[in-house]
Length: 431
Image (cartoon, rainbow, N blue to C red; front, side, top):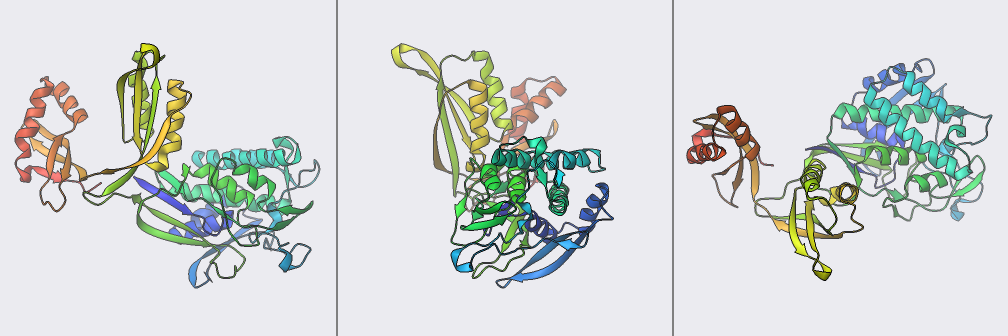
């Protein structure tokens, strides 16, 4: 599985995401195409440069609107008091008056009427809706009445749409993020001094893990938070990635003793070594009121959601009532998604969850030449072993049985006969 891993170890903002994506290999030309698709080429310019933060080189992308680049500023009060604005720029603390700036629904309209790809429109609109809902909660208003400063509005619009376009271009199957880190203190906004995180950011990250660190600045901007919760399938520390490329995106401010960078890793889902320990989440619940005909559908939905395995066990409950215990294994990073499927499909009121470890063999898939033609098979190998054990793949055998008009057991037998000849097996690579 191709995944993108986000590491906001010094916070997250739109420009940091853009910089990391460019550093990862996304061309600035692609981003410029998004600006043109929004009809903003006359007003907006993208500038990309290499910078160094605490000895680590990354990419800084600036969104220049009408010749202006938004940057950090100091709030009233001495630095010793911690009253300093966010290191990503104060323009993100949006106005909510009815007659100032640009309304978020105007930005949504611009996205919808633009020449952006449908996926970019969908992701960008979702991020702005989250942002508008959070700002509306802060000010006791409605999302359609939230206004952004003119320059900040276009800056955020370009940050969001270009980020979504760059992520879409990577064609990843899953996006995971480590918990973002936030600083402390206060931040300057249009209406005065606000606590860190800014109120809209705090609302956007409700229900998600956030780590607070000893940095007297805002590290997570509202736009960065909106993009994070829109793009990430899960925010968790339980991630294993086989890295192919790594990119760093830089923020504006220099932080003492800490690189003001965001790291992105593009790769595949990590695989334990042969015979190694593989962490899994184990979810269990007992249900006594579900129509038995529904269980196969539930199992299918769980497997589609990424469960590694799921099975049913008949149990006897209190007062002798028969019930069914559902057990699901999944990667810890997929636990939230799996829980949602279980609650939605079974109607259970709760479940037991634990993180366990399993010992696994190196495994892969391959093609085996049999007397019935080539068939996909599953393969495993013992630690230190050289050859592969071949196992029939049920769906492939089922299709062959229907195609050839044979009993399924006959297809299984053909696989077993050919499995003894390693010359007939083409292995696709350990997974």
